[in-house]
Length: 111
Length: 112
Image 1 (cartoon, rainbow over the protein chains, first blue to last red):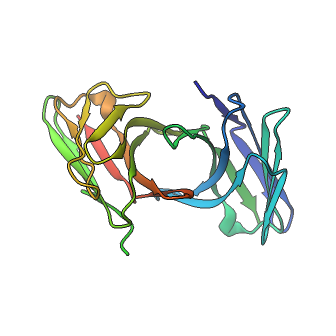
Image 2: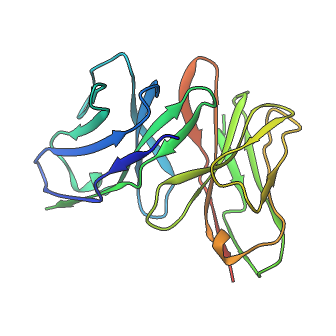
Image 3: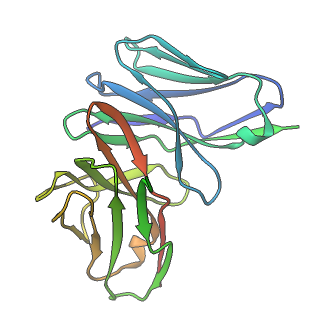
């Protein structure tokens, strides 16, 4: 089945850009997602990208997809302390429309 | 629209007890899911349903049962609670040509 991997931790200074990386194994995954989870809270969908796209931009968020390498990244421009959270990458199995999640990257933003 | 609602928010069970986690969506979505999130981990799929009357196992179904008698409701049943089922449980739904998956707020379950 699908396997999604992420680095565990990223620390940046306020105002810098953050780049969170993700790799997946199933080349047939057609949609790839980024979710944000704050402590004790549910999951907030940030953005998603269809596999026939290379890039998607949404305000401060930029998603880059390299299908050849099965690599996805999320760039957050001008990172703020409110961006401190855990970020999950997920890949969709289009048959079941179910998601396989990575273990999450904890983003720490230092003032 | 309320979206996806889950009850209860918190629950403590003793080993061997049973309970049902409730999930309801008001978006007329065909697809519904149950995931569990263990501490420090991502979510893992327990069961899913592609429509009323149809359910199937995900990656971690042992110890759970589901039913889908209506489009709106997708309850998750724990029959004999075990400490390994201590987790946060999320219900989600998806439908139509929109491939977004909408999550409920979660149920935090502790089994002692």
